[in-house]
Image 1 (cartoon, rainbow, N blue to C red):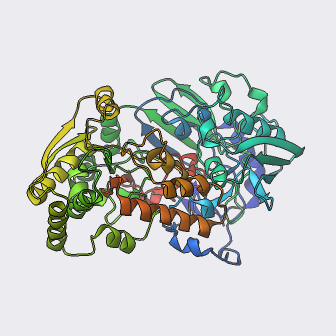
Image 2: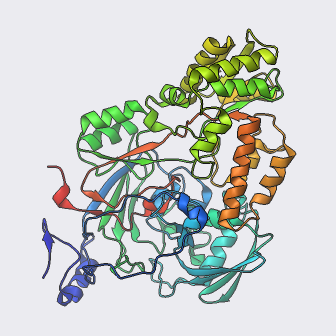
Image 3: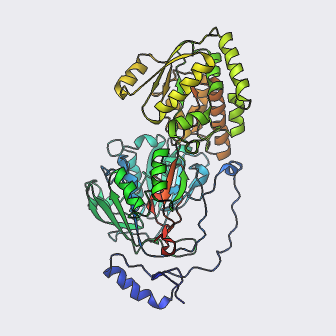
Length: 575
């Protein structure tokens, strides 16, 4: 029996309609196809044996409602992408291209973390790494076709990997330092050769920007819709610059859900390009189903506007890896003295800094170290290393003792540089704690522009800098805390840390890799070239109850942007 929900089909249908609806797909832009029925119960599977590091993974919420086919999802971005080629690393690039293109591998949205343990296949059906880690053989999915009807083969993978690692054709080349070449073994097998064993290679390959493109379209203008021919769940049907992008369901999409039903569930997607204010107005007026797949509310102002304007909205937290520590200039006295740096850390209260920066503690992560908790030490270890496991008054007294021991019982003059907005407000809160607890005469300088700010950094005219720390792999911490790091704002050097960072990418075993990252965190929280602040500003993502199966991980351009297994249930739409 066909199940009808507000005039649209759920997943149980009569096979007799298959051929009829297949014709309708060709005639109607947004007609839903006939799909095999969903079993009443999921098939039995043998649970995977997790690695010991797997116990630190955070599951995403599981959708409990039955998927439904049909409907058009409406959401928005606030600026147009400058390219439809995700390899060019432009803002919102993967948001508009992931519905069209697939990757070789991707991160499993069942979990929030994007770590080696959560990498699963996309166009790669399976892969095998050689014992020495210097080659990876990928078995590719067969029967996949590009939107223009041409078959997907190993030639496309060879072309895409060579392109995305070519500095002349790609802005993500630096993500793949270990890459050497790719060999076509047969039509559906490729072998990737690496310069050295690299865990980071697979992590980079799973990023949303690392999309597989057709070799036949080499040289096509990447700003034109002619470039947007993928293997993904949706076909880009219309792109009006600065207005919208419209996508239609790919009736020949190769991927199926866990019950064997063809994806995607949605018929169409419309992605509007409008200002943030217009996005909020449209969401409140129910002209959008969700704000978007990347940006939500990162502070109380936006959160209150949307929550008060549309109290029926649901919210889901999307944490991000990028944080905002306070870099301490270890070449500027008295911050060259670990006792002074330790004193500063003791009087810092992450909750206060988060509230100062974002308006509410829910937008940050308390008891977090310099490295995001997805990679870094457990909370109890962070608290112990920072001395935050003691009552605050004891911490303040210990900080004052350290300052006196270092020769600064009455404080010193301190210059704090900061970018504007979140970090500036947070710096002001911390500065007040330094004044009241340690008698430090703090001058907070922000709003002077990036050029002037980094001129002061170059000239060593600062004690601290509140700035971002954005990485997609802990290997990139070498940029910030390695002796020769280009963003070593702390002027910090530790040979032991340099060695661990240099070897980190070579560690393929997830458990050994996590332990190495934890050792990095221990060193950083012991030497304190930067202070952890808890400022890992979360995006709190708003959407209406009729949008189902939204899940977010810790990167902006995850495959949630593909929307292949998201659906609309009209029975939950607020009238």
